[in-house]
Every structure is written in C-alpha cells, then in structure tokens.
Amino acid sequence: MNDTMTAIAYNTPRLRRGADHVESWFVRANDPHSPRAVWIKATVLTAADGTALAQAWCSVFDGRRTHAWCLDIPLEAAQFEAHAVGQDISVGPLTMLLTGRGGTTGGKLSDAAQTISWELSFSKVEGLGEPLSLLPTDRLLDTAVPSNKLVTPFPVLSCTGHLDWAGERWDLTGWHGMQGHNWGREHSPEYAWGQCVFTDARDGRPFAVMEAASGRTRLAGRTSPLISMLVIRRGDEEFRFDRVVDLWGQRPHLDFPSWTLRMRGRHGTAELRTHADPEQMVCLAYRNPARATSYCLNSKTAAVSVHVAPIDGNAFELRSPHGGALEFLVPQPVAAVSPIV
Image (cartoon, rainbow, N blue to C red; front, side):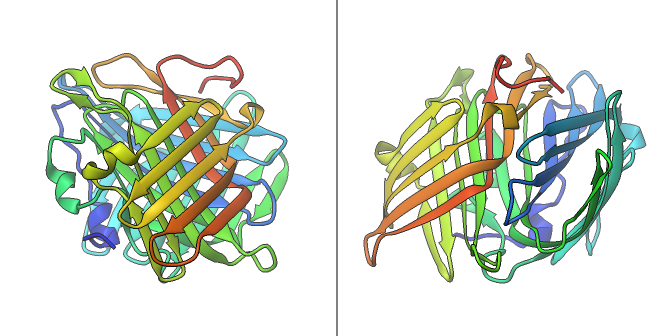
C-alpha cells in the first residue's frame, strides 16, 4: 500500500477563506442485493471575492426512479469543525460526524416534488476499509499539482439505519458503502470517477473494492491530457496503477454513459469497464468559484467489471451488476439525464 494517512487526517478540512476553493465530504451506501443506493454530500464553496456558501446534497436510486436534492445556505450558518475525535459537519438539516472508525449522518431535504429523510450509521470494514488514495504518495496532497485532490478515508463501510422516501422506509442494515473527501481551486475540467464494493452474491459480504479516476488538471493555465489511476483491493492484496511513469500504459476511453480504462504498471495489467443507464442517473450542477458551472452525471447503481492480470499470480475478474458509483463531469448537461439539480 502507499503511505496513507489516518482516516481523521484524510478528512481534515482544507478550507481557504478568501480564495477560490471547493471542498466536499460524501457518503455512499448500496444495497448488495438490489439496485438501490443513497449518496449524501456536504460542500463548501468560497471565492477570492469573499463570497462563500455551503451545500447539502442527497441523491437516491432504486433501479426504477431517481431523485436529487440540493440546498444552499451561507457558509456562516454551516459548521465544518475538526477536533480530536474527528470531523463535525452541519449544513442546514444535514449533519455528518466522521471519526477514525466510521461515523453517522442524518438529515431531511425537500423540494416542490418530494421529501427525503435519513439516519445512517457506518463503520469501517477491517482490511478493505483502511484509508485509500489514488495518488502514489500522500506528499502530493500538499502540492500545486494535481490541482484537484481526492482521498477515500473509508473505502468500505458497513451500514445500519433507515431512509424514508416516497412513502417508503428502507432498512439500510446490511448495506455497504464508502466515504470520500475531495478539494481544489475548482472542479476538474473533465473527469470520470468510479468506485465499487464487490460483495458475495450469497451473503452480501464485501470481499474486494475498486476505485479509479480519469481526469484532466490545469497546468500553467492549460488543460492536461487525461491522467488515470486505478487501485484494486482483494482480500489482503492491493494492486496499484498510480505512477506517473506508467502514463504510457494508460488507455482511458470516456464514452458516456460508459467508461473503459486499460492500465499497465508494476503490478501487471488491468481493465475496467463500467456502464450506467442514463435514465437511472441524476444531473448535478457543480458550481466553480471563478469559472462556468460544470455538470456531474451521477450514478450509484452502475454495472462494473474489472479484469486483473498480476505479474505474479493468477488473473481474476470482479463483477457487480449494480453496485458501482460512476460519475462523469462535463461542461454541458446531457439531454438523456434530467432534470438538472
């Protein structure tokens, strides 16, 4: 594994008041037996001109319906507080407590059409759930490049709780998920990001996890080519495709609503294939402090397959029919995904 920090350190706020900055903490939970998922996020947006706001997000997916909510409030009315135990977040009705072992989140969001409320507790799954970063070293978290940072304090979580939506109550006990944290001067100009907890078809227990990204960054005012990273954990093994010297071995192909990524590195070769139904996605308007709004085409019930051929050992394949997170960030909305939130 790379030189990962603790979950508490990974979740520490990087907020810079009086500067262009966007930062989010998010939690995802998936039903291992059906295409149901919930995604919850708290965001900070500040600009060099002094304006600042906080956002509470929630999206829900059930294989037939999707819905998304977003609430903006002044940053002064929100709370993003780090302490010895972890991180306390409060954005309007959304609360999130992140500790070294997991955490809790609760909230209630409404729009003109629907209301959702939830109480969710989550705890780290030992081994697979240790903190993860796609970057080859944590030293890059404090450098100018890449301009967007993403870490995963908890790649695999075990969940309990409930969710109320559209007259239904979902029991979230036995669901699995993850918790992530990202920040930067703005959203990446373009990216595809995916994460999947692979579970046993019989008992729903997690046995592997994958996270990957293909994105562009801004270098000296210019936009870079797509740069990709991929990490797979299976049992006590970890296969990393993350080194800059491996750029020549990357073959990303972003073709919404599908993403294919072929990687070659020191651990062997890997191929990721993930796909989402546009009708089962939400389109989220992601504001940038000093640039035009970007649009996140977001699924939390994507199909995922990963084929890994290690240099030492037998090749293996991981598959999930509906357990994957898949996001595309694009400059314009896509008509197949609506409405925009």
